[in-house]
Image (cartoon, rainbow, N blue to C red; front, side, top):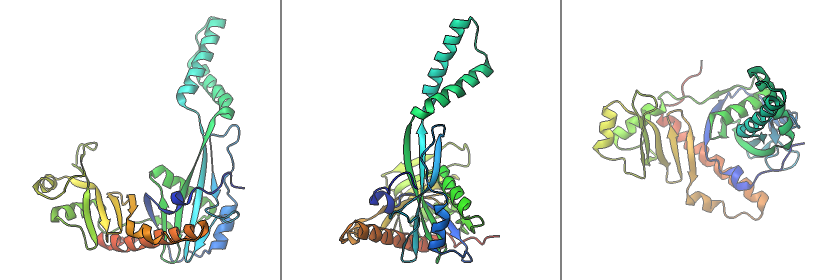
Length: 311
């Protein structure tokens, strides 16, 4: 059984950070079979000596690991993690070492210190607090999308690893485009306008070829004018750019083809306000969110030269 109940609707439905993957049209899978595969790997609570536990949780209804609405599926990876700060372990270990030195009149060596630290960790783990979080995934097997609401590489990799463990051989690859996002964003800035359907917002990060950690950031400032073009002429490229699509969705695009801080504008939220109950609201939100993201991607990918051909 999963270790905890479904998170709130708002947290589930309105994705904020998108990691984009392509599914092969040859993937032979349906929702009941995927549900059965995920059910073999449910989230269990951390054992007394476990630092972390990962597994699938119910997106909506008890017993259903795949929530299907029309042709789209929602799945959720749950993670339960023990919170045991390194400073707490270090302090307890140092106290134990000081006691040994005082009682036995000798200094604790390096290997013994490592053993002490491991022993202290094992003692503290059963009393550690736990934190729970969920990473959501939306699958559209008809159009070949897997979209994760993940704000970091580690969370996305964690989700993909868990999914491939359940469905070995799943034909999955990160989305790649013919034109790199960094090149395209730099060209849009130089031209002073975004591609068709996209407006340039007031957020930008530019980086020179070297040093790698140098960056120029603009926030809440107009990006028109000669200053931006001068930076581009000097060899700087855009690594993050705020955009608005069709006056419906705002977001920040990165040079790694990540969509961050996705914001659904009022016109979409208003369409989601007519539900009669929580179950209906959940499905309306999911349908609106997935439909808007699918249409956004349908314009964004061509703006980046179309998809790169896989090997």
